[in-house]
Structures are given as structure tokens and as C-alpha cells.
Length: 199
Ligand code: VGL
Ligand code: ZN
Image (cartoon, helix red, strand yellow):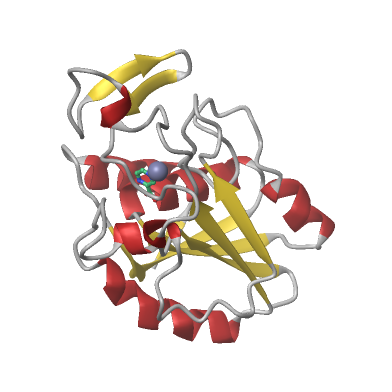
């Protein structure tokens, strides 16, 4: 398993029940992911980490409501309630997550003018986070992903992992979805098409 990494996506308070962008059953992934963490030599976490007033927040666009979309220079962007603001309790990892063994935390979405769903690239699909280079330098060729949300940050990360030449597996029991306008079915199909293994 030395060439394999677990990538835990955005298991943060704001994506759990009671949070600003709560995913139904979001906290149920915690025990599943804790079990996975024990079995991997390499564990990487991602943390959605927005400055206040981030461009993905509906509140930054007068007249717009959460879950509407806007056109950004890099493409269509879904607007969200304010969430995962840097340094807030909502941006912290869920208290129950056993993340001591994580060797890297990739923060994403920290540039005000662009969102970042994927652990590998910002939403322009061009600006790298540095994760591919990190994994390659550490000799990792296979990644297993779990976390929140299945149809946004997990799916984008898994598809980009394939695009970057990694073998990619998503553990669905360790994921929960937002499912906005059929996004879960659409992104599930895209993951399969990209060669992601779903288990
Ligand atoms: C996410 C929407 C906005 C996610 C992050 O972690 O899936 N979704 N920011
Ligand atoms: Zn976000």
C-alpha cells in the first residue's frame, strides 16, 4: 500500500448537519472514514477554505440566491450559502474525524475570485493545487477517495485524479451527496466515464 493514498474530501462542520451547507447524513461518513484512515499508509485531507466575501457565495452577488448559478470567466458557477470561511468553526474538520495521521492538508477555494471543488485543480480546470506533484514525488500511483460531497468535491477530485494518471477509487459508503438538480446521477456517470471505480 506504499503507492496508495487515501484522500479525505472536506469532512468539515459546515457540510455536516447543523452546518451552513449541510449535506444530508454528512456526519455519517466520519466512522467509515476513520476506519479507512487506519488502513492507509498515506492520508491526505482537503479543507474547503474560503475568504469572507468569496465569489462562490450568493451573498457576494446582489439579487442572487443560494443554488442559483452565474457565469464566471472560467465557466458556470453554482452559488452557495456562505460556508467554510477561513478560521471559523464551520471550516474546521468534524470533531470526530481521526485526522492525526494526515500527512498533508490541501486547502482550496482560498482565492476570492475562483472556486475550487477539486483537490487537484481550481474550477478553471487549469490552476493546480500542487497535489499531483506531491503524490508523484511520494511515489503514489493509486488514490482512494471519500468525503463530502459526492457530486461536487469528491467527483471533481476523482475525475481530475484520473486525468492526472492516477488509479482512482471512490468509496461511496464514505460519501454523501448534495444532489442539486440531478447532479448526483450526472456526476456518477461522469466519474464512470472517466474510469473511476465506484465501490
Ligand atoms: C463543496 C460546494 C461548495 C464540496 C464545497 O465540498 O463538495 N460543495 N464548496
Ligand atoms: Zn466551498
